[in-house]
Length: 104
Length: 104
DNA sequence: ACATCATATCGTAATACCGCGATATGTCAA
DNA sequence: TTGACATATCGCGGTATTACGATATGATGT
View (spheres, rainbow over the protein chains, first blue to last red):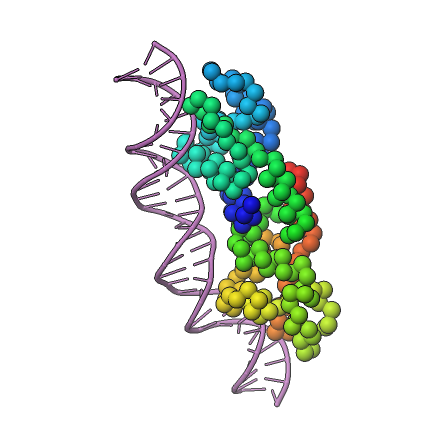
């Protein structure tokens, strides 16, 4: 896990906000209920469009931001039909917390 | 404390390294002993020149990096004679750790 | 006052990031 | 297979970051 890359990902206010919104997807993305033909339990995963709307950014920017957060390991993604669901990688976030709270 | 600004400061490998070196100044900057006319107890503060040498960067870059780390609160500086001594702001680092370990 | 040393600031070219619209890819429904 | 939809990628202009040398500021000793 490249800490430098991770910190860079978090140095953008919108990306930081997205990560925090995903702590409580049900509260922050209420419209995220049951897309057709998709299993109901997505473990709190949220699709790109919902994040795009909530953050008020363009679709391409949303996609790119989520990619940045995923490539440094903070998010996990899963495709179901036409949607890509993103959720927090709690393990990576815990590792980051251990680093900041200990080695840093 | 602006977390976004703090993460940006930490997104540079050299700056991150400097902050970690300053955890143990005696080990990492052994030459930092007693400048003339300066009180001996600097609470582990290290001057710009030592950091410049250790990191292998130019003087202006060292000064600027330390300024970035100080402006986001991670470092504290104190001038004694011609030297400016930098040391970690453990309180700010603890606050960052609380944020990453809790709110993030 | 002067020279010297440590640090800060300025100006710079190269590079990276930002956020977007346009377009490409992939998926489903008919 | 065609159309509609969700997401990914491309290309762009604007802006910020990077790291440096040159220069300015500030402190010390003579």
